[in-house]
Image 1 (spheres, helix red, strand yellow):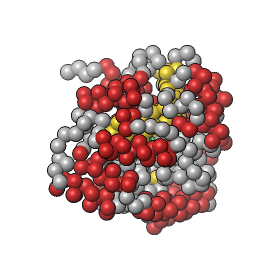
Image 2 (spheres, rainbow, N blue to C red; image 1 turned 180 degrees about the vertical axis):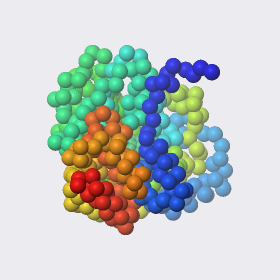
Image 3 (cartoon, rainbow, N blue to C red; image 1 turned 60 degrees about the vertical axis):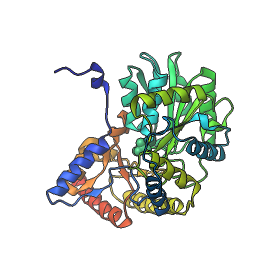
Image 4 (spheres, rainbow, N blue to C red; image 1 turned 135 degrees about the vertical axis):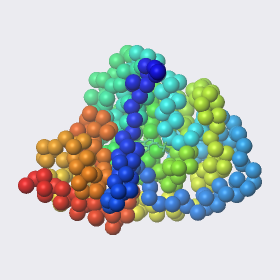
Length: 389
Ligand SMILES: Cc1ncc(COP(=O)(O)O)c(C=O)c1O
């Protein structure tokens, strides 16, 4: 049997593979602390669950328009206008099952074979996977620790060529927790405007930010028409399993994305959309409490890691990941990932799961309890003592 050639170019997200291995070890009776998967450990707030249950009972169990219910798209465009200071309307919003399909559809709608796409590295692995899948050239924008894991705008400018079609940015960032500054965004906007480049701005962690206010690249002149904002419910409202995300973009592109949705998923779950509308318009206390809790855990994990010989860790500004440097151990990231899981029962991810510039780092998600984080820290410390002796 033969498979399509393009399947050789499709990557993956190793978090799911490490999770599967960790579950296998647990099934064999081993204790594993899960710092690998990027999802809040909180339950979806009750008022959102109640809205979904009511929606099912009220008959929101049928197909709906591919771009989503107009009333929910209106809630989203209002929310985006309020938080990003732009002037979008509901026709610019396409609702899809999660943040990931926004990447998939946008790259399919914009990028041809031979085009170049700039993307953060280390960064969310699906960007590079999809760029390769459509036959385009992935051009990594290195994110370096010495620059607080923000991209270097001068370097970014040097990577632009006449073939650059799309630039992907992500702030707050997975896996580093880095946040782009106002000045970075302003310069990124200039590069995009001067070179007529589309920008996919992955803002899925926009509400999980600890120091200062979230800013979007869309605030700069010329940017709303060339930017696709990617956001959703997964992280902010602990709704990873509900599958709700959205893109906000200029209307013609929104039409293309909506047609791609018709060809693929038809529409996003009807009652999930009603729940998402309730999430955005209801009380934000649960979500705010979750972020406050993440902030506390950030202190515990960063301080704990920095006390361990062989590890150094910058304080992330947003999201719920740390990206500690393990270069002084002399071990490769992947080797450390395997050792920590197999021998010490701590599931984390190699920095290289996020691209070549992640070598020498690990990613731990601190979407876990303080008790478990402390337990993991003592196991990591034991591992480091063994390695460093
Ligand atoms: C940067 C980034 N973008 C998008 C997503 C995808 O989110 P969703 O689960 O809504 O598809 C993730 C999930 O981990 C992410 O880290």
